[in-house]
Length: 88
Image (cartoon, rainbow, N blue to C red):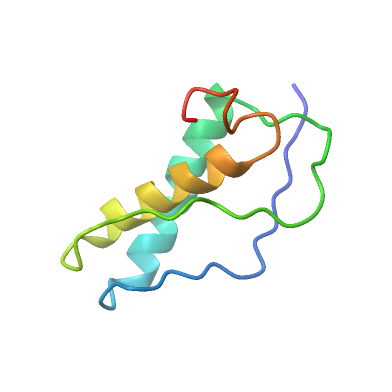
């Protein structure tokens, strides 16, 4: 199995209150790892910037819910997954 290396320079989450940052990052990392085990991105276009589609959540959403939703949006924006994958 090939290894995936993902570097996220900046993750911008706007329009929400200040959820627990560590909890959000932990949930994001765990959910994205789980999704990448199920569906891997294509190698083509694997470098560069991706832009995930907007998500709508309650301002009171717990950090875990926000992190999971952001991970699903990022996963769906990866090359070869988007519209052709299970989330798009």
